[in-house]
Image 1 (spheres, one colour):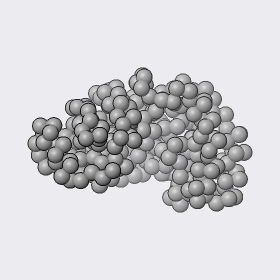
Image 2 (spheres, rainbow, N blue to C red):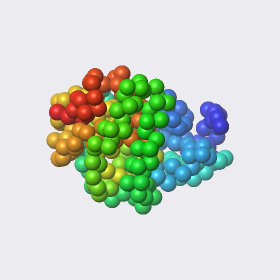
Image 3 (cartoon, rainbow, N blue to C red):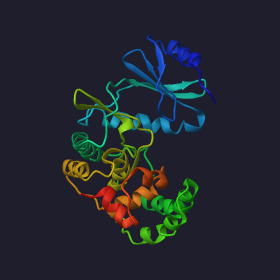
Length: 271
């Protein structure tokens, strides 16, 4: 289901908006700037279920984080496309790893995880979700192209990690530089809430460690000190394997090397 520039301009007109319509290049969903102050995010029918999540989390976090987030301006359906209209944030994607950015992200996560997760968020049973991810983990990583010697180590590593029974918190799940903005030396935006979930706080640190601190020990230290709690590196590594979008071969190409998952846990998610 393709969306053309003309379609987007038609939606702008039907919503009574003004300004040039420019598509953002990044992202899995079509997102357009409308003039200087608005963003129109569009969801094809198979992703309509993500609209309530985006809306609920956007409303829950607005004005409650030390980083600006979009303000909801409208929601609805246009020609089978669900849409969310929101205020536009300004800035550039921050360069990472960076100690100051890491500290600000830690402060942001502390505030985010203190907010009551909206009722629309899943999973309803975190333990069942984790169990399902474990059952499919080896096959997922095999499809990603992970070497057999690493595939063989996954079950024993996961069996040896006690993921505990942490109270569920509001998770963005994909806090990375691509979903952050920086302007004038400060973080000026966090966006993209449709992947949000409720679950263990360490799950959040998997993507943050992979895409913000990137194995830099100084940055990880700044992150966890600002957050106010040090996650167990082995639990974060387990969630890096169990994450919905996990791609271990990619991580191993881009992150510090190691000879075991225990060693990688310390190098990726430790000081």
